[in-house]
Image: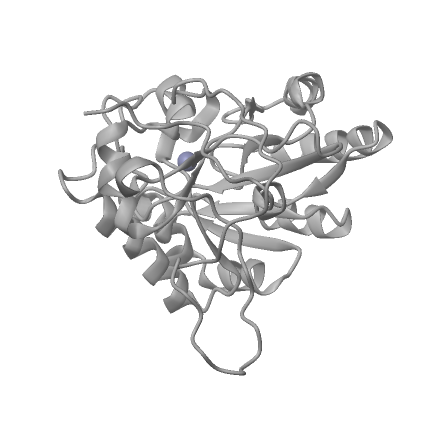
Length: 290
Ligand SMILES: [Zn+2]
């Protein structure tokens, strides 16, 4: 795969349909799993805001938070590792980025990490550390990082009917690595999805999370243009897509060091995707009737 295709596959360009924002002032819906809480006096479980399912129980899609709820922005980092990249890791290629996580901690920037199951298998201690830190939340970026809708920038396709199994395999990998603070959010590899896969994934009860700001960090060597793009495009409620992998996004940490103080100087607060979802009640996209 060419670097360009890989960059696209990594989410360098949005490939889901553009989304129209709906400002939804009503209260947040419900918690992970979507089931009613058990009748007991046990400690209240952590309530994770999700979007209600779309028509027919389809997976809802979220692209950004309210534009009218203050200057809040969510930096999201895709921890990409594809199912077939094990041999490259064995040869020393690093798909993780511990310095980036350390910088986010030092700058006290909350963030949502969309992790592949394969990444958690390769870096279980890092995955567990990120999940154990309340500053972060770990979301699902598939097990395989294969395409959930094709074509998708040359990514090999998840087997027909295998979308839900791939998502659940990633959650299983997180559990095996001991990752806490997982959230029922799913980011499609490359952002590629269609009504059929949203329907197929409905029973997985995840909220699909896209983005409204593409940082362009995939394969960027110079942090300057990445930072400039983010600073230019962020609006209140934005979800910014970046990457947590040295292999394919080597300038991201340096870009974050530029972005964070400048957005704070403009009055922005950094939040997690769950913070933006709190208070939203409608998906950004409804699947077309079939
Ligand atoms: Zn990705």
